[in-house]
Length: 131
Image (cartoon, rainbow, N blue to C red; front, side, top):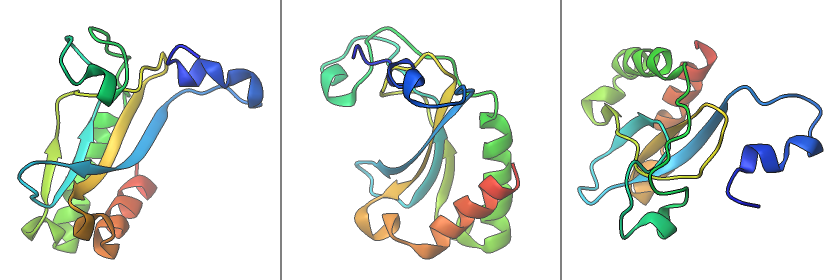
């Protein structure tokens, strides 16, 4: 496989992949609680390219749904009250994997205590139900 996970598995599934959504944990040096949305790709080579996956200098197509998802996430975070504690952010692209299919990451962060929070997971679940 050359890092094109969506194309590497297309013969093994019975439907076409139109969009890839990664539900993931977010890590940051600040450790601030956050709910994040971001595209994938590595715009330029860096010392972290191998560690972060993808291909340096290549950014897969972003998901056309990112804007809708981000706006709904902000709404759900506000309504649930979680925005009092969690930052709701749209991040720049900064890691792989490399795909040819439009994709985005949806994350809970930034440390282990945040990753397992039921209210953060519920906020994402409501967001996804409404988009």
